[in-house]
Length: 162
Image (cartoon, rainbow, N blue to C red; front, side, top):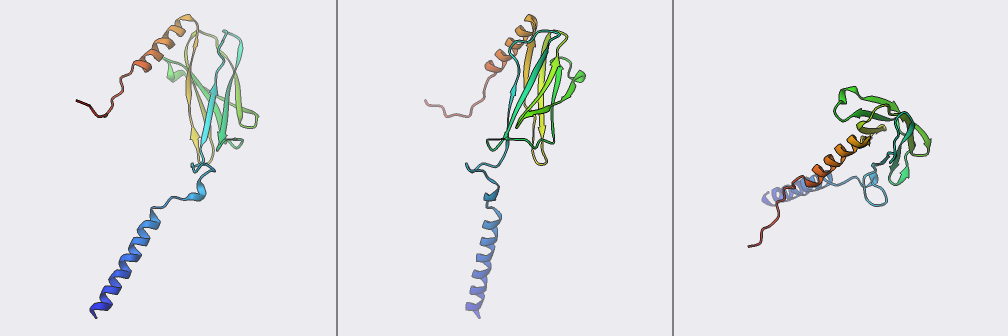
């Protein structure tokens, strides 16, 4: 009887181990050729020279697993002045070529603007943003902002050598 109990216990432990291990494995069928989970990559492109009262093109190149992503359910640009996020405007983007979404916009006043792009599909969403300076005062603000980012102290938990 003791031998039967030990076998049953061993079998139960083996089944429990198999169950635990199988529950923790990754779903390999949901990865790309590099072993990565498919994801959207976005390249938000802003013009380098913006003139007031002239139309400019804001462009967004979207890829999924290194291929142009054409199935966006929504693609848009949200624009606001740095100090006025409550006055943001949202402009729907149009797909011009496979994976490239664009919109034209006219800036009518100088300032430091935040341009946030938005792309969504049934299972993914990305919202990268960049800043755009229009006018010399805004350019100075942008330089100061970028300097703050560069000089921001990074806390490290490295090892000290005495």
